[in-house]
Length: 152
Image 1 (cartoon, helix red, strand yellow):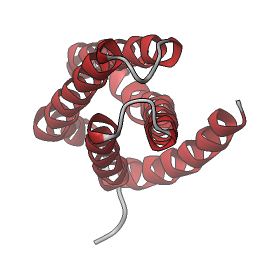
Image 2: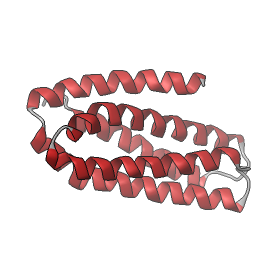
Image 3: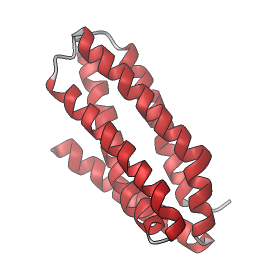
Image 4: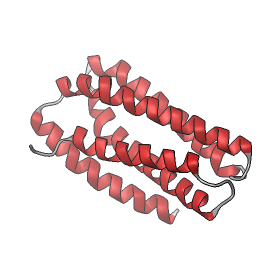
């Protein structure tokens, strides 16, 4: 089977699920928690940027893609706000732990919705060639963004 945009995105989705679980289970105030939070933050932010550019943007060009793309974008914004809040709070507090649980829940909801609904809708709007081309573009931009964010 040839590579397509949806396979590429699912790879990151699996990493996101794993990292969210590990962050929630991490020891309060530990170096491991800090490292895991930075890893999940970079993964989520790089994924969102590349996904918005190379899936949402092309889908927004279709009338039938407007509503689902806008909804997905709003969920990305919600995740971004949670990450911002978590970045400025002490990672040893119960409040931070609550935010981590909320982030994990929000990310899992978003990924499930994408995989069970959005991908099917988008798949009907893109040609097989577009799906393959977008996969390569997504993968390159995702890797580039991870480097930018890690250096940040």
